[in-house]
Image (cartoon, rainbow, N blue to C red):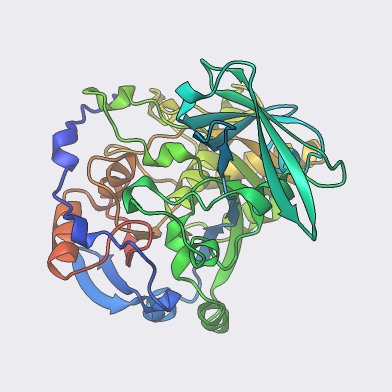
Length: 405
């Protein structure tokens, strides 16, 4: 297909600061919920979600777990150095593996106050851990790429334990506040399981064990995917040509049971969050790659879906190709990366509906929402603002049924 010209000005809107939710509500499922279905908008509460989903729905959510990715060190001079973990580079780039490492690891990072950190200087932090103290060292090994090596003095302790004991919750920059104790649990879904995200899949923050009980009682099925959300999700689009925006690469892990479950529920899939959408649609294009003989690695470049083709496989054909590949190679899980960029002109292959929060103007996520809703995205967001919905990560929710003709 020909990539459409995207005028970013068409995807801007005015978001007053007072509409941004700075803290979560006392109860996760007490948020408002806006439903968009067949052009109609209705206003409900998130606790109504079991009533809004058909009994045969497959609900797919992202079980990534946010790590306290913001590490604070104090130089002997008193200068504060803030290191934000972005993605691992050594001894492995595989997030689940590096989180369990018990030896030095290297991460690409963002560094606050980097000018104060001298070349060759090793920063030291003392971390209370189970009645003892761990000494954590940070060494800047490449200033240009901001690669930092972390080492610690207890070979029995994994990197994930070091981070959990010393790091701060990586709240989104637009909250413009320091994390507090409640953020440790509330900036995390109740089903978070696999450590590695540096931002929460916030659509899932509304779910509670009670909501899941009601969904299961209705016969709604569940499946889990893992996409470790990166800090790039907050990166604003600065390119005049939207398609030149450098989409962030995020790591995906999906098991065969999930893919087979999706195959048996095609046409009935509702994603919890944009990260789940990106994962499900990326898997479709991975199946296309396998069918087209374009390599066996799960790596979806940002514009791969927009490559001209005479025809594209069905969702069933693409997902069956993945299952067949996994069976052939004896794989229970596939892992890879995606940069998929979903913007108006894209046709969804797997997802019929999306549960999501309200997103920043002029962002890659608002482009995804506009792909679902068409021009009605302006009406939906306008009505949410007029109806005093709370926006962004700790804000209210929506259930959007895909409007593609």
